[in-house]
Length: 180
Image: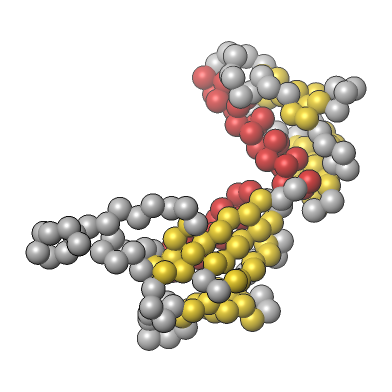
């Protein structure tokens, strides 16, 4: 049995789970999320606020879907109760970031400013050179953070660009081949 799939999901206070034959809906203080139930899996809500994911057979696809379904629903429960966030850091001389309504304005060494339209359900905070992306959908938060990072990826020589906070950039030595 899947090590991840067999673990029950604890439903926190203030979170409600509605299970229909084709999908699951999770509502909480931060919003609501829905997910289609994957093939070969089923969900059962127990009396003591635990959600259990079961699979119908031991086929390879059903085993894979078992752990995936449990992770997706667990992320939904965690997202609508506490939310998710990712932080990005701007490195470079003269690199600036500003927030203007629902547009993130980045000045990252191009001949023009780059405007990034912030999607609904995503909140972005800017403090000096740190951009914090937060929301209740883990997949959407990660996607938005990746799209912002892809505007100017960190380069390996000086480390200039947009990187995740805590990300380690492997540096290359310059043209002479010496370590600096």
